Length: 353
Ligand code: SF4
Image (cartoon, rainbow, N blue to C red; front, side, top):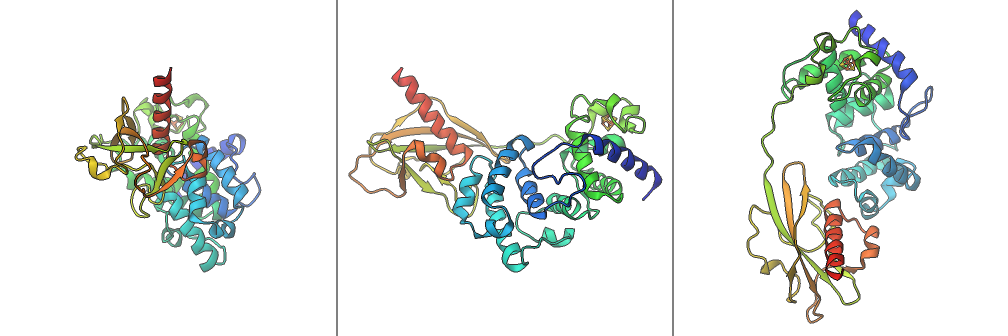
């Protein structure tokens, strides 16, 4: 390790020892981290912030305190607990990974980056974070916070994502300091607190005297990001079919694909244009379109759903299960379908007022 990197790491670790953020998945200072808790938190933290993850992490660990317990749960129970956290492929991969660790690896997570990468749901960032935090292995941890602090420390002005490899090498040089897990978490904490995207608090930063971006007064401009092309938009229709007793028709989505295995209200496929609706209506009752649409933004596209409501005629059988709205929480309904339910409830209240 070069002397400058060592100095940077030491300064930040001294700061971390005094200011580390407490999270339920972090081991208290001096205690060994539990790889199960580190893995579970890293999967939940993919695409989700710490504030939302905390409640889910506590729920999961209370119900399934170790990897064997999670592996023994049904996929449906895992999806139901996950409902609302989004990106549901994570929950399916979590369950598949727990089964592999529990039955194929006697409950022990692999210690090294390459072996972790082979497990379902563990990509390069998660593999590096788990290896570093759970086992103190030097690994190239690079999340949004670390990208920001490293690009500023070294004043890297090349735009992301092209500069990723350079930032990864710079991050690894800092992490390889004798306390890899603490160093990775220290950089995450610095990025989440002092080295914020718009207004970095440089006067309170342990790197204030050595940060190249601060010295050149360009910290707020880094990291530079290449502009993304606008995400495409899709449209679809939802058919909210209710029985006279208030129960609503739900069905399960196919196991593979977006929101796989989750529950939904029947509807059309999501496409560029709405197209023919009749073929997708679950019942031949009279359908009424609600005012407005339900908008949801996925990673790669934006979706607008128009919602039709109808009362089941009772004359024909339908595919799915009937569930009263007050019991929706017992089913793995993704955030999008919860928005649909809220939209229906709000519109019906407005109509009744
Ligand atoms: Fe970020 Fe400022 Fe610290 Fe540099 S000195 S790492 S810009 S907070």
